[in-house]
Image 1 (cartoon, chains in turn yellow, red):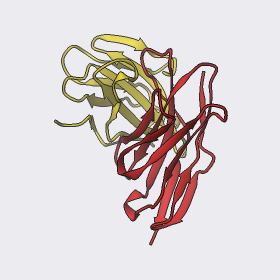
Image 2 (spheres, one colour):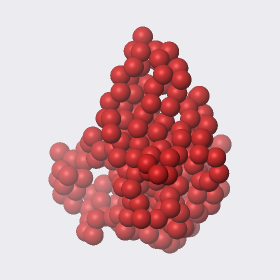
Image 3 (cartoon, chains in turn blue, cyan):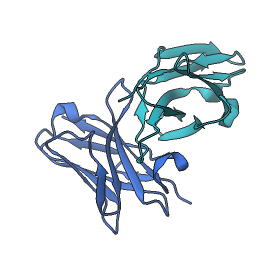
Length: 115
Length: 115
């Protein structure tokens, strides 16, 4: 059973470009979480999605950031018009159930560098 | 809202010595508690979690943690560390009323095991 997959593992963008980060949850998982880890900091929650629904986006910046989890295909975190402060590691996690009844399994992360 | 404090950003220790990684949290509601480990260039892996019941929780790789409600702490311990335990360790909490199980992480503690 493959784990959570994220691609690309490393992404370099120039200021003003768009960044698309992909997350394929574990097989059978329908809950996806995105976290951001800034340099020298812990992970910060961004958004929680179920298939075709955004459940909680309280941690998402109000502008330039969006996320989706379509019925088919991976979850996408999109950052428009990237700035240097967006440089971070972005982690995706998935679970089969909502709540603490099930463990969140994390992917290896995408390390975004904005030049 | 919750917050998690990991007092030590780095903990150097010799192989086969005991280690304790400290975690304190603050929350206005009851929480669930977690420890995750992150090996270099990998995603986070769950070590153990406290949901209810016995305050001493045993996890993988010989780690254990004790929940102390009065001191709002959840320190991680291992009686004898190995070189392979060198990694970043994150303490996290989840609000018991949070149906989505979003995690709030501490800043991490880098455990460096020396031969």
